[in-house]
Image (cartoon, rainbow, N blue to C red; front, side, top):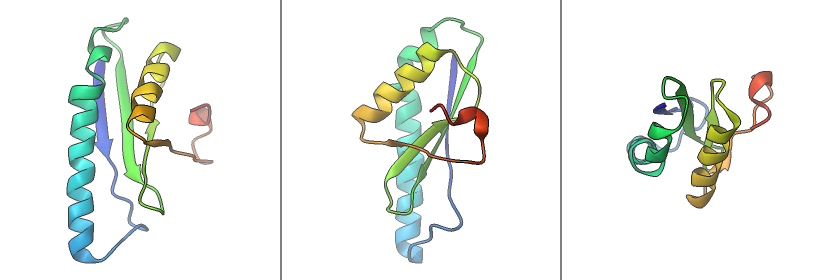
Length: 103
């Protein structure tokens, strides 16, 4: 599987400029770590040709939240959820993407 973790900078969650820069850099670093370290076992998970795309962002209380934004096998969802739970990330709740509400 190919894993892609995308840091999403929300325009409506804006702290002061210096803090925003630090938070955005942190979010990018955490996205890279999640992709390259914590989810590296997904690289070898069947089917190998599938992609897993994960969005990582802050919520309004500046907690890291995540969601898978494409259709993936259930075992991949479980693995992503387990790793994100270990890191203290919360599931991204959204009403606009009905197909992803199961996460």
